[in-house]
Image (cartoon, rainbow, N blue to C red; front, side):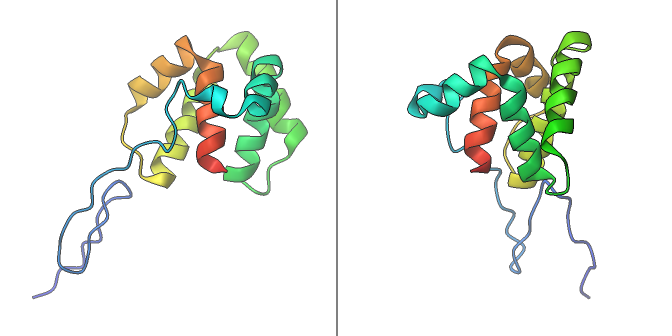
Length: 122
């Protein structure tokens, strides 16, 4: 008898019931020097990189709105806005990790995380 269970977004199942493993990020967290333009842009104006990342994740979103969201969120709630987007990228790309690690990365090295996320989405 066939089951109608399709699995969770974190787990994909082949027709032969073999479970796929989670992926890794294409680029390391500290490989930001590989793209100097993106690196400089992110360190000078992280809100621009965040807005570009959100546009790739949510094509209907506005650049100015996302840029302002990052700016005001960075003044009040720190890494919260970044780690939520990072988690969304991980879930869509089936990348291994967890919410605590996403939050910690954005607390300690938000610009590095933004560059890694931008390169993953490109």
